[in-house]
Length: 170
Picture (cartoon, rainbow, N blue to C red):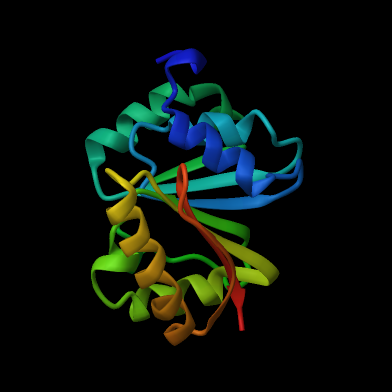
């Protein structure tokens, strides 16, 4: 997959997060590693750790990002969010694209983990490419209360063209 064929939602998500050169980033549900490659292009001293439940997806992400993995810029794990183990304060930014758990059920357990893993001042960035305005509005309405219940302060919500919710620990 070339940069030109990278899904627009991933390009928009990485741009919206304003990844800095020294950021320590966690991607939840990295799939085949397209966003990992986009983040790595912005890093100089920082790192991205990416997780996905699928061994197949992680194998493809490792192949796609072989140079970044070899350099230690990208670290990829086949694990679920709830089974992942990272040090407290390990990340400046945590993001997910099209990961539905944050709006289809209570993400309380996962948010407790993310809250621990975020460094002071770190941000949680959630994105969805919804199939239409009605679904985008539904997601944009459901996510902020779930994040607030999980101990996060929602800073911004946009619903077009990509649903984006940005939050920090309360």
